[in-house]
Length: 383
Image (cartoon, rainbow, N blue to C red; front, side):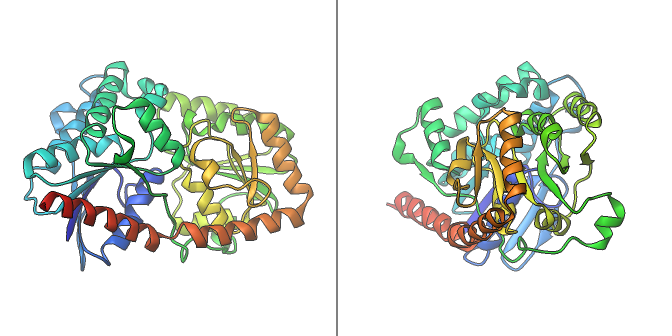
């Protein structure tokens, strides 16, 4: 069997959880079948069982108008189907690639699988990123693809409910397959001297690691910092808009205890930051899954996270961490401070988190689930 995975993010161009998902899923799937990855960029790699090709948007579209980003995305979708195609299944990730999957289904008569990592109707702030017209285009591309896909993969049960609420699809066409994590990479690792020399990281700190976007609720953690008696380290990049990042940077600069690392660190450096933190904070206001919580738990770090979306299926309150009301800085501070005051509780949550990740969120298990889905679709299409 051979599958074509189409995605915006793929190494070295990874900005969020969807990129991590495709990286590891393609790696594990390549142990079970041939994998063809088509992504945004200039990547080109041929490995044992995995081929990777990147595609750049049409140059004429660059900076033509405010919503050029959406049109550029559409151009990459078209280009990614211009090369020869001989896969048995096409599988796309995020709205950035879904339209290409629909085209592959129509042109090559193959089953079309689509994974939702988030949903455009639940991210209205994206009209600031894409422009109102661009946001209408992204929402349309997502809708027509989801309603045409043979199977829709939701990364959480909460996301499945959102898909059924916002799109005209039967429930049996939506399957839940959780995100996963590389347990050999994400494990407790001491903070290296190189990071200590480069950044003034204190011995005790609470950590946020993720994108700079309203979805992640970073402003609520910044507001909570005044009430947290230790350093708050923000390792945040990949802003939706420059205006939002500048606004948050100015806000954080007024806080005496915030260290903001404005740099995309390597995975190895992120592992060290997680491992040395007293607590990890995920203040998201919308989170279909929240892979950053898995990363922290795998590094045996207790988690304080908003009780929203897929987080409810990852973080077990009073077992692997604490859940708080989204958008409430005082609740965030209260939960962080409790774990700072109760190191034995924090350590227990960290140990429980590692065990939970090992049991339910390893990539080999997720790849097998995904292959079984492909097998069922190919068998059905052959009848």
